[in-house]
Image (cartoon, rainbow, N blue to C red; front, side, top):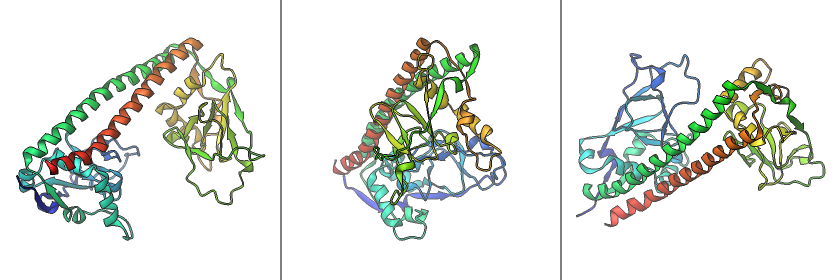
Amino acid sequence: MALKKCKLGELIERSTVNNKDLRYGADLIVGVNNDGVFTKPKGNTIEVDLKPYKLVNNGAFVYNPTRIDLGSLAYRTEGFCIVSHLYIIFYLNDKGKELIDPYYLHIYFHRDEFHREVTFRNFGSQRPEFSFSDMADLSITLPPLDIQRKYVAIYLAMQNNLAAYQSKVDRLKTVCDGYIEDLRRRMKCEKIGTYISECNTRNENLLVSKVQGVESSGNFAETRANTNGIDFHNYKIVKPNQFAYNPSRINLGSIALRNEIDGKCIISPMYIVFEVNNSEKLMSDYLLLWLSRSEFLRSTLFYASGSVRDTFGFDDMVNVTIPIPDISVQREIVNIHKCYLERQRIAEELKAQINRLCPVLIKGSLET
């Protein structure tokens, strides 16, 4: 059977229906992340004007026109929601439903080839933005529907396997979180200041050259700042098993524990570095669990509020209180959490494999 080539604009229609009657509340707001997944917003939605928010029903394709090249496009199947007026929404029209499986189009959009085409079309514009007219102007080659569905079935089977695995990973995290929460309720909390010491070793002899920072994901990463001409003598050295955090971004998750494998690094003098000084009473990994909790990260905003520049200094850190059980109990919790992290890493790798499969599926369908 012959392949069919057409403009995508022949198969889709845009929707701009909004929440002008304020019929729907902030609990229905979602966004699209760079993995092409609908997620709850991280920002504050209190007192946000919801009138311009757009309505999204099942069967909709939703994308951020300024981040679509990074993967910010999703196909809605989880029920009704509303999204920011900045997003673009479209559905398959009657002709589109006859010629293309929506999941096939979803796979088509999640290929690096598509992202590169978006980047190419945006090149040279004052503000790179992939509009609906740009989307409609795309040429797409389609195999017959039955061929599309064979390859869609492969994709959905992999997605279902991933979802089953991810649900088990999430349950493991629930067990870990529940264990921690139970400790908080049963045990008296102690200030951690007794167990930690600030570290202020400078790179005076320039013996350490690896310049890093702490991302909001809670990981050390190579600095993105321009380091040309910077004097690194005053930079702080972070050794294995020491913590480092950005006092003005810790509320976003910018705190990390240095591991043995990565060795030493240096970070900006604005960071705060500290370590556990009594490992027989407190495990560094156990402390990291508490300092990575969303409840703690939110609390840093409260303690930092009112200063000229909202920062959570070491004087604030020493007053943090957590339950400190016997070291054997700490070790059990840490081991469960490490198991969760390893399985989550595997889940992320599975997601990456599925994404790498998208161009293979499209190519296979066109060659069949």
